[in-house]
Length: 126
Image (spheres, one colour):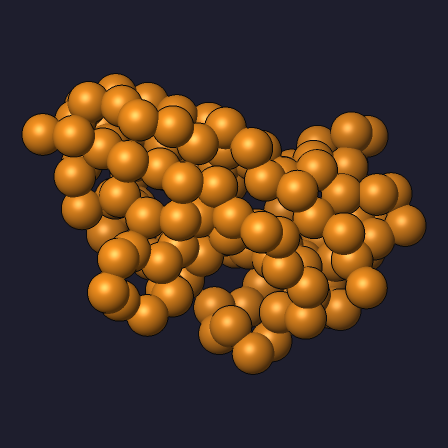
């Protein structure tokens, strides 16, 4: 099973930026598409962003609510996934999870990701 560890969450004011990171071992990062999901209090976990496997760059896809404000990226040399979040809003408050799937191509459905991190809390105050 893939071992994933998120970091970078915190408490920020609306309009601020955060960069989330997700560290994985090389064996478990290479060749896998990755994704970010989030779960707000009292709500189901939802898709945020995904990136395909690629030696350089990768295909990305975002949920509508974060398009233009968030950027998903991966550093294959460091086996690390990132989510840069700008112009944060109170409705972005959630636990953010990193996920990996056993495939190269992107996906937006939870069940297509087989490995998950423990999550990192992001709280945005108004």
